[in-house]
Length: 129
Image (cartoon, rainbow, N blue to C red):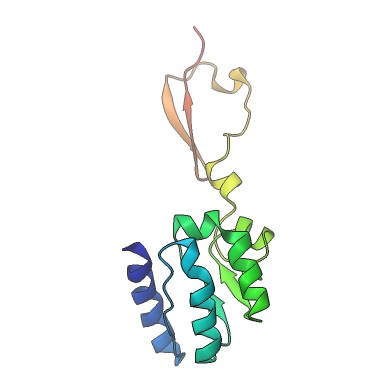
């Protein structure tokens, strides 16, 4: 499972910094309230939500539960912070996967068909003949 692998990697970094981590797993959204109750019982002081598609999909629910539990929360993506997490530490998804920048066909005049790379976007160019 990706979340457990992510936790192991984060745990190594935390250990190097002298930070103690505890894992609280939620396999499905119905598990979220119990996970947050366990965090409160364990005396958690902050929360880092690691990468998982369900966590991204349910960001607003997770943010509301974190607020209720008074846990400052770091989430993976900027969009998750926009839905209520204290901060997002990943790239802006719209910029990462959004449409390529608009360019004029004249920009490619005389160039052979090629794959051009712009930042983290891939643009396939094929000049008109």
